[in-house]
Image 1 (cartoon, one colour):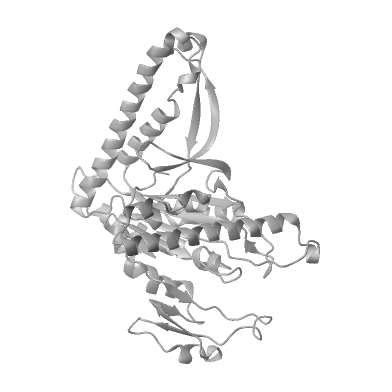
Image 2: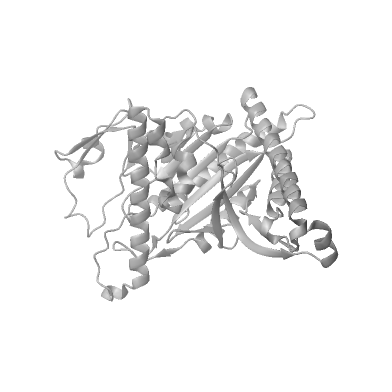
Length: 400
C-alpha cells in the first residue's frame, strides 16, 4: 500500500491450500512487525518450517475474511483519502492466489473495493449533512480500466478500447473512443479547418447508494476478462485498476469543460487552405490558453482543499494484478489454446516491467539521483504507464 505520505506497507494473506497443492507446498515461516500479530506457528500449524520471511506489516490468516482484511489493512489508512490524499492498494500473487476474491469479492462476499466505497460514501454523507450554507456537497465518483494483452479498456464504458497519452503538463490521460468530427462547410470556412479529432473521456460512475455499487459489480463481472490458467479455469486474464475520487459538482463541470475544449482542439494539418494556416495557429494558441485556464482552476480547487484538510480531492486506487503464470502446458492439453498462451505471456511481461520499475525506483531512492529517476522504464508497458502516479506519489496526478 502507498499513500501521499510515501509509506509502503506489505501484508501477506494466506489462503487454504487446495487438495492438489498440499503435497507440493514448501515449509514456510512468515513473520510480521505488527504488535498484536499471532505467531504464525499458532495460526498456520500446517506451514511450520525453517524458511523465514520477515518484515511484513501484518499476516492475514486462513480464517480472515474480506471484512477482516479491510478492517486491518485498509480502514486504518483510509484517513489519507478522507483528508484529500491518495491511498493505493495492490493485490499481487501467483495465479490462483485469491487476488480478485480479495479485491472484488466472490460468491457473495464483498471485496475491498466495495467495502472501501461504502465507508467513504458513509463519511461523505455524514459530512454533507453538516455542511455550512453555501458549501458544495461532496460526490463519490468511480472509474475502472482493464489492461488485457497490453491494451487498455474502459470497464464502465462497455469495454471500449482506450488510448494513453500525456498532456503538456505531464499528466496521463486515458481516452476512450475516438472519432473524426467534420464541420459544415460554412463553419469550416469560418474556422479555417474542416474537421477535428474528438476523443471521449473515460467513463465515470457516480456512487450514491448500494444499488450503484451493485451496478458496478455487475459491470465488472460482465466485462472483466477471465479464462483458463495453469491453476484453474476461472482466472483473471487481465489487470484491473479501480479508482474512487471525492469531488464536487464545480470540479466535474470544470473537467467537462476542459475535456470539451481539448477534444475539439484542431491539428495544424487540418487547415485545408494554406493561407489560413497563420490564423489557425492563433486559434490553436487560443484553445491552449483556455485549456491552461481550466487546469489552473482545477489545481486551485485542489490547493484550497488541501489547506482546509477536507475530503475534496481524496483518491483511492485499487489494483487487481493478474497472477504470474509459468504455464508450461502444451497447446492442446486440456483444451489449452494459443490465445491462453498469449495471455500468460502478456501478463508475465507486464509484471516484469512493473518489477523493473520498482527496482529502478528503489535504486534511485537509495542514490537520491534525479537522473536515475528520469530513467525509470514506465513506458515499457501500459500497466506501468498507468501506475506511474501510484509508484511516484510525489509526481503528477493522472487525470483519467
